[in-house]
Amino acid sequence: DGGSASSSLTIGNPAPTITSIYPTSVQAGGDSFTLYLNGTNFAPGTTVQFGSDSALAPSYIDTTGADLQVTVPAADIAAPATVNVTVTTPYGGVSNAETFNIDNPQPYITALNPFSRVKGLGDFTLTITGGNFEPGATVSFGVTGGLLATLTDANTLTVTIPGSQVASAGPYPVLVTNPNPHNDSGNFTSLPVNFIITPDAQTLVFSTAQSP
Image 1 (cartoon, rainbow, N blue to C red):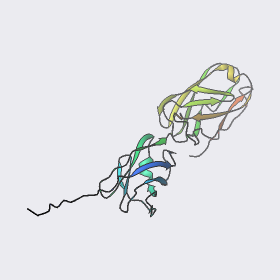
Image 2 (cartoon, one colour):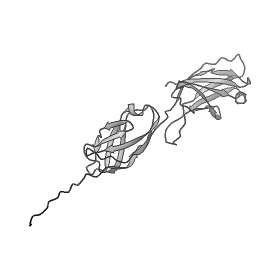
Image 3 (cartoon, one colour):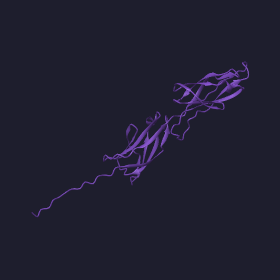
Image 4 (tube, rainbow, N blue to C red):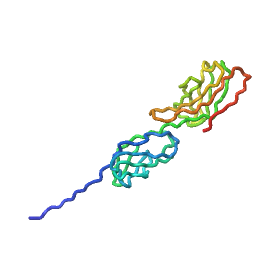
C-alpha cells in the first residue's frame, strides 16, 4: 500500500565488570580504608556493595569507567569474614563478584598467670589474658611453638606447658598466634611477654606485659 513500517531499537547500557581489587584483605578491627577497583563500565552514580553494605558511594570514578575508589568503613571489617565485592550502576547493571578476606586480628597479651615458676617442677597450665584471641590460636613458649591453646573467650586462653621446656632458669618469651587460613599478609602474632623460670623459690619476680 506504499506505507512503511517503523521500528525502534533500544540500546542498553553495558553491565560493569570488576577485573581486580586492591587490597584483597585486611585484618579485622582495623580502621576504615580505601578500596581500589579496576574494571569496565563504572558509570557516574555507581555504588559498591561490600559484604552486606550495599550503598557505598565511590569517592572517585575515572572518566573512562575503568577505575573506582571507595572508602570502606571500620564497621564493615569489625569481625573476621570472607565477603563479596560487587558494583551496581544506576542503570541496574550488576558486576561479577570479587572475594575479599577480613582476616583474624593481631592478638595481644596483658597478663600471664602464673608469671613465674621454679625450674624443674613439671607440666603446668598457663593462663594468658589479653585480647583478639581467635579459635585455633596457638602459643609459643620459649623455643617451643605451636602449642594448641584452649580458648575461654576472646580475652582468655589456657595452654599446657611441658615440664621439659622449663628445666633451666631464665626468661621464656610467650607469644600468641592467630590462624591465617588464607595466607594473607599481616601480623597474626602478639608481641612477646616474658615468663620467668627461677632457679629456686627465693627468687622474686615481677610481671610485665604489653598494653593493647
